[in-house]
Image 1 (cartoon, rainbow, N blue to C red):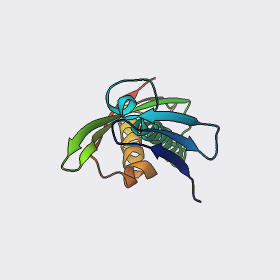
Image 2: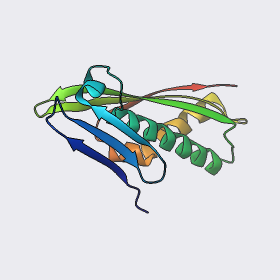
Image 3: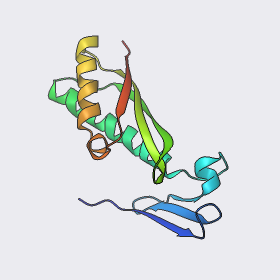
Image 4: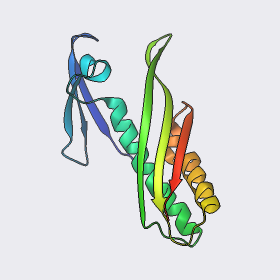
Length: 140
């Protein structure tokens, strides 16, 4: 399976403008240097990465739970992408997964094990070289 995201850009790094879109949805979001780095209105490509990573994590946790004979009743995940710079300019310097799940029949220990598995095995986690940390909260 191949999924495709698209982006167009016109102009200089600081003064240009672009758009980000997906092929499976009607998402088309404008972005600029100011939206990425100065808090101006507009899309942030790294925010899309964060949302995709959160969705991937949730699906991985549901899969691992299923493999353990458990079913996720609910899971909410946020992914924080930390931006910084390196020798070549802007860079992702860290990723932190924050998840809270209710999984009937699980124990805190089993939940932490399954959450760690989802963090490590989610396809986004495997594709990203930045350190990925996590805070996992189990709800009963």
